[in-house]
Length: 191
Image 1 (cartoon, rainbow, N blue to C red):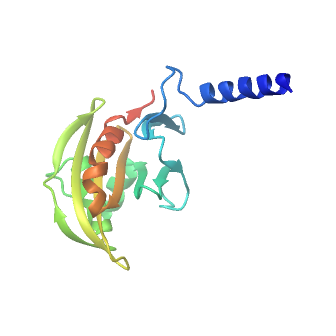
Image 2: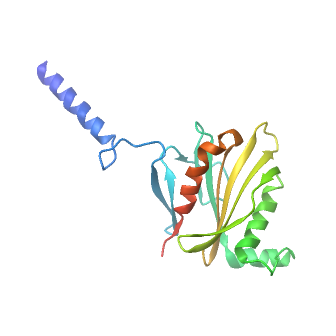
Image 3: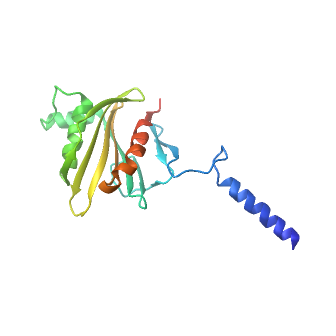
């Protein structure tokens, strides 16, 4: 009997140690892990989010937390294809950069299914040396009672353009804003 108790105790201790990260610290819900997509780019995602496939069929990355009402996708497309299509539609503005055109196109697409209530001014920034544009907006989504807050960043990745989109309920915007900023700033192209 004593031997069984000793084995149980040792097993319990090993289990508890294995639940800690390599530094021996307990994982916090805001801790991040790096996800690599198609050996093309990587991005850091919180441990509280899990991979999914049902958010957007065009997305190369999809994560969510139903419990925390936090959602994340990354869309990417060839820059040349985007430019060609929008020039053919006569919706490409030569006075704007490619990434600014991509931002405007994606916001126009989003506005088809949402009523934008409030939108921040667009901010130009650099993410890991890449030109980017960032916008926050609150919107009413068709068929939903609650307003949604979106955190959108559009990144010029050379051959491709990317949109990192995080969203949550407006009432949880303040809670998730820093996390979505950290996620977006971690975006890296893989050479």
